[in-house]
Length: 246
Image (cartoon, rainbow, N blue to C red):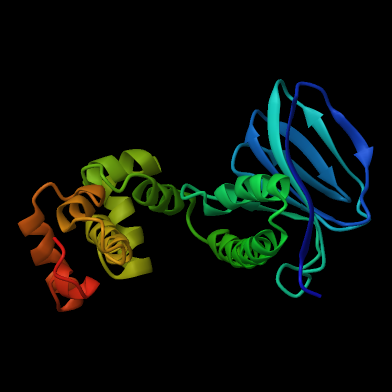
């Protein structure tokens, strides 16, 4: 059954929410504050960026730890996109899922049901994929995960083994060894790989100058960026975007 949005709203308070249940599925995104949440038998620590997945008919609560703000989305259907199981999914540094949930609030308020249904379906697919990646992440070394998150969250910062090792809480030699085993390259080389992949996506926007793409990906020198891009993908940035716009 295709998903159908029933409600989407922003809630804020500093009190606990007692046990309750809905006849429909619910997604609860923590926007600010901290909450201790129980979803059925699952205990979860609610922190900003975490989405709680609450299947229909499942008792759940929120135990406040100060002022909080959440985005709640109620929907029915969509079980083939996101399994109806209690759980949590982190939206991560990029936060695409969080942005989409807040956009659903506006779409619900404006009555744009068709657009809301399409965005809801995309959100459920994204959360399912993010959850699968989360299970894979659980097997990784926590220091490596911290370094990977730093790379994704700081695309414009200077890449250095020292900075990454500090983010990971590891010695530089230990972090380099972890990257070699996992990615067959050092942490800085991996960081450039991720930044160039981001640049390739940004170049799909024909109105974004190549120099601005380079800057957003941490390359102050467009010529240096172009050399690295060609070495990685076998073509110049302008060729990759299929336009002569610079």
